Length: 383
Image (tube, rainbow, N blue to C red; front, top):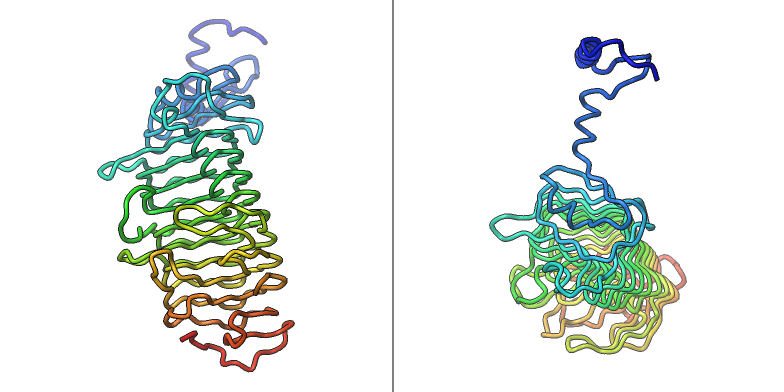
């Protein structure tokens, strides 16, 4: 590289570069534009062996923290708005530390915590392209967040949930993998520790995720306004669980569509709230106005009270399903039935144009054995 003849020449060249938005300053070599320099200032780089939490602590709203591949033994606590935590892919791994006293997230046994308050939400945080693995509770736990995006994250081998979000709105889960977590791969709830009516999630989206070998692939508890779309849910004890109770507003008013839910046949022992789980594809329990449409639900088989392809089941507190619509699904090879209504006290539930082989009870409207055309009305209430 040639050196400039004087400092004045450097200053003049820099001024010219600023005016024209990028220029050759010296010796024919390109210099960064003002916008490129600003972008660089927005990023904080973390290399293997360095602390992600340290970078988060000094980050300002709107900054991006780029994390190189490597294993980081720590938990990360985030409350800064508009912060992006971006790994280099599955090779960026966040796993537990041997230290006992790091931060509140570590003390809770969790990997990444995004935490706001009712008065001040943790807004527009993005977690992208990294792995959280092996934590005592959730790999990711967000509470009181607004606009959280979890994208291309792998959550595996965590002792409770893979990804848990509660008391939050406008959450997006897209293109994630949740594998071998002891509870749900993705769990979206109004609250884990308090009763109450369902939370309006204001358009939460669970899209394009792969959920395998968890207790439940996708769990939705006492929430409304969610779209669950184009996910692959296989090899869990249960596939997609939409759960409500007697709280007002009721859980439901959400859509489960274009998902592939197959072979969720692991055995999971009963809990304090539910019987044992095995062979459940899509379950609705105690919810209203939920649309289950255009899903492929195959080969889910078990002997649990909740086993079957698409199942309506009364909630543990006796609340029935109401005004739900099950339509245009392909459900085959599920046992004991492709479509089971075990909530016969439910009101206004309809079954429309589904392709299936077996139903429970046998006279359930719109049963089309072996895909034959049904003679049942196109819309027929269950009761």
